[in-house]
Image 1 (cartoon, rainbow, N blue to C red):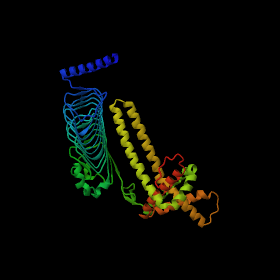
Image 2: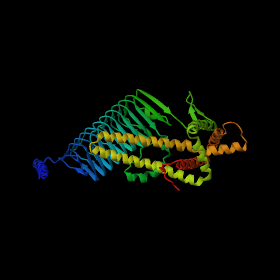
Image 3: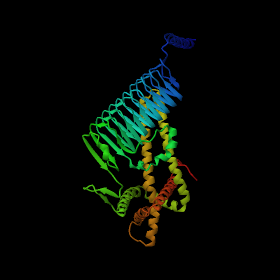
Image 4: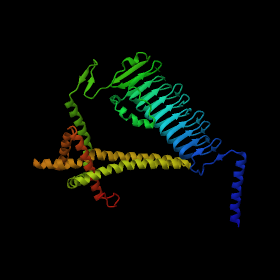
Length: 467
């Protein structure tokens, strides 16, 4: 009876609190035990972090913590107040005017439109990003995507960093502009330096073939390739320009304190001190490339031989005895590793978001950074395995075969077999087309053979058997 009375008292107390809240009509939402909602209406207030999910997510209330939102269409409506960072993931994302964003804004989506000031940094990965006139960025803007358009009056208080296909700057950047793109249209003001790198590969107009399909992503019309400077544009610092073409007439109407012009051409030519083109011999360039590749392979060969001599020998025998199986397993291994890394990244991000929603911010950050570090380390190790170690498998067998034909009887025959095979691989890989195809096949067979070898020594049975 005493336990029942205590529970009854708690239930009655909770009901009284709810009634009082309804009377005063504050519509306050406490997120200590949050439920997944799709909207936060006007007048609603959250005193913790908030997670919203739905096909259409509308936010018009007040969030004192962080805001996480996932949906096809996300709109932060006028009157909304977010006192901390915002994380948005969706197809169409809009930040309307009269929105207070006190923290950083992180956005991943297709089409992003910002109409309100962002107090701190703005980080966007999207097909298109539009900064409307009232979209002032309190610190830095980081953008990766296809199209970025900054309207007039819009101001970025620190730096603008962008890697995209085309960018149009019509507002003000209080510090530095650092851009790598195919098309850059500069009509605004840059108070610091402007570092602009133009990718000359966009001159082939190949992107226009895909433009009709890309317009389904609301991609606007393409800008002219290269750097286009408007009559009213100004750069108070230096212009550091890197491209395959010089600026020519683009600098005539542009008052600058200085210009650093880095003109690069194809690797077969360069400029001498008199700015005359000096053509290099393609055969000499190929020899130097082969030497660099040989040094890299020999470096990893020494390490691999010291720690995995036994495995290289066994893998070479498997590669010769089961080349087709090794080829298939190598291809499957690449798919499993890279797709697995992508799935792991998505899961880590989702788990980190969920932990953040439940106010476990330290655990969320720790899990995220450790997970990302493990994924990067795994991909790095597998990349070394695929690019270098896999080639040693067949190189060791081919080198031994050649030395046996010449009846080589010197010391350290196994080492010289590996070195000889590597040299032969470098020579054959220099043949156009054939060398590329051979390199792919050698890598796939080598990876498959290494997998079989590791599976053979896998006493715990952790590695799966593809057969």
